[in-house]
Image (tube, rainbow, N blue to C red; front, side, top):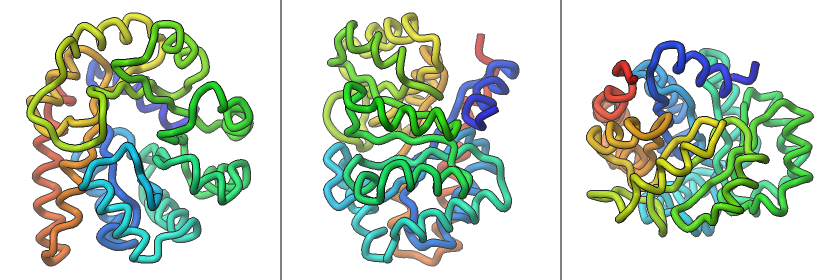
Length: 268
């Protein structure tokens, strides 16, 4: 069974919700990314979104844009990225999702990079700007390799398009909590709960919520309505701190434990 699917089976059996952290590969360094991923798993993370950098990450806020630029400055390329995946995989079975944009993966050769990623230990792809309407070829590649292809749904997604997303997505559906870009926010948009309930009711796939989730209270709020929470900027911001890695790592562990705690409660 694909590790993403197995994670959600295990969580359903335990009546828990998924915690899915996003981190930028190569930040603050290559080996450090492996250490952070393993720390997140030890804290209770269930699936890892590992960012492959793009020079123009249009859906990302300032923190994730800075992290992508830092990764590129550090020399992160396809081989270095896959080496990080291999480094995680030698010590962990944590499911790994390649989180990126269409442009850099297309440039690498989508089918070829997917094959290499699978061999390294990747379990799925989430390409933010890949429209489901133009994804048939890559869907077939992913099916052949037993990789999950994850799509985004937004508050503005029409019911007709949502049904197509749900037919063609695999692994889980990523619901964006707000329109706009990533980044820490104090609250949710108007009618967020109503819209999320409708998406959850329509979906046979697990539904997780991301964009703007940055506090334990927000994690708990979304877990009451769906299958898990994605947190990126609140973690990535700490990886950019100019401090000794041991101190950065300890702070990140504490932040992660607090964010993950609500997902490990027993949920009805």
